[in-house]
Length: 190
Image (cartoon, rainbow, N blue to C red; front, top):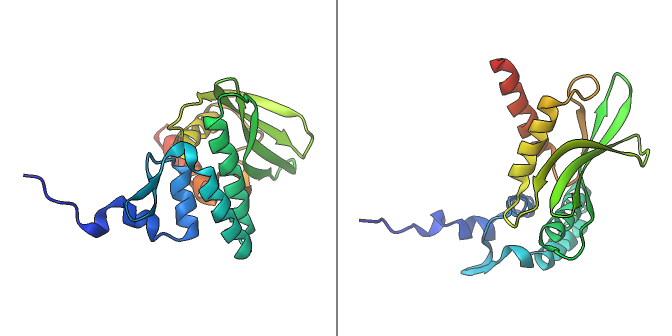
């Protein structure tokens, strides 16, 4: 016999009662349902309006890092669901490589029906294609992007070791730590 779900265990309550930062983190994971009120959820392709409201909140709170994340999340979701426009450039995060004093920005760029990872060094406006990509599907989330970056950093020699996190884009410091914690585990096994 199935047990009924307790009211507080339903994901709806964690969405509704979450802080603004927690709501954005949930939306980055692109769940099938995102609850905005009791028994009211918004499907994936209709979340830009909610993000506009959350952006206003973040601006009011003067949380500019969260503003940048929300802006990039809006671009990301637009790219995923926009079937007519094939080009989007989404900032993932900015890093710094100390030996050569290089600021490196990593981007996710939509071209046709896939996303590719590119980087730009010291605001040069020249993009380097890292030759890793992922298909643009409706359920795409930050988790898959993190896995793509793990693959990138694992199999491509980027300058001298792993870069140092500087600032967020779609991905924040927590995502950055997830990527490099996974890489550290892989390196220990080898």
